[in-house]
Length: 167
Image (cartoon, rainbow, N blue to C red):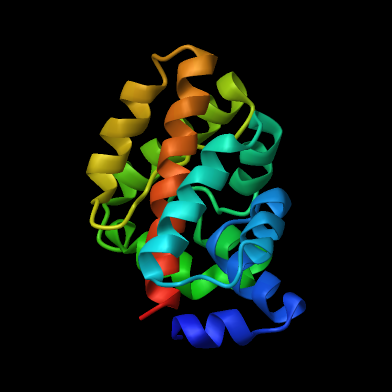
């Protein structure tokens, strides 16, 4: 999609496109209100400034729009809108051993129990073993630090999705 095409979408159509990039309603609405954009860089900068101006409640809302890393059943059932995006982003789990997948599932549950939200990581280009090491490392964090880490990872995901949208 070109910048011109993005700018010419109806509000409803633009919301749909932005929702594919980030599931926080406040972010979607503010991105839509920021149109028209002059160029791609303005889109990326606005996305960043809006994201980091939001409250933790908005961040948590965005996190709920992601399947757990390696949870293919969840991906198919709940996240059909972003299924192809998430499958590509999480392709590093495709060749994982059964042991690694079980460890990821266990660590995901420990993480969610501790922090109250799923483990968010920009999985693009990461193997299942790398993600497993990251989740184990991040499980040692305090809640406030981990919320910020997850928000930074969500921002990376959003930026990748915006770049895919604006090819």
